Length: 254
Figure (tube, helix red, strand yellow):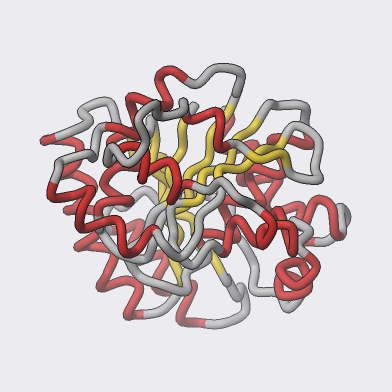
């Protein structure tokens, strides 16, 4: 299963959701790969911590190879890094991804990630984190994925962006990946006692949008999780938010 976490709006929790779902899958004994396609490398930093600075092979080097900068390009598995967590590996990002995307797009390399993943063996689940933009890397991820998970922050700006996002995903489905399936919209930073989130969720459901029944609460604990480079299942297995991530994973696994 290849799952892409995508929203072209920033700050909605893409990296946090991708990393925590991947960590739960790995903790349950599933061989799991996290792919970070965002030049900010937040997902990579989340699971590797300071060790990210020591990595000499990242996805930027892999895409260099795709552009033909090496006489004998290495397979994708040569760039996989083991994290400190059992069963969880990562293909890390770095800032050079941003400068490579124009060259990659001009040479129409959007299918290369899917082709490389088709040759990559040994993983039960793959989670792909994407940039907050519909660029080359996001399109590559959507083309390579089986399903798409859409984080949604409970505000009006996120709602407006959601309609454009759904249109963009449908376009990718029609033109590049007919097998791509939208698993649903994940309501993040949810505050059950506030009126606006309740109203927005009800309205979106009324419009027929696929809102998932597992919500993720707003919590200061997630900042501690980021700071310590410990996904919630490893930082605090009994925390409410950890349980919510687990419930979301279970829902997606049905």
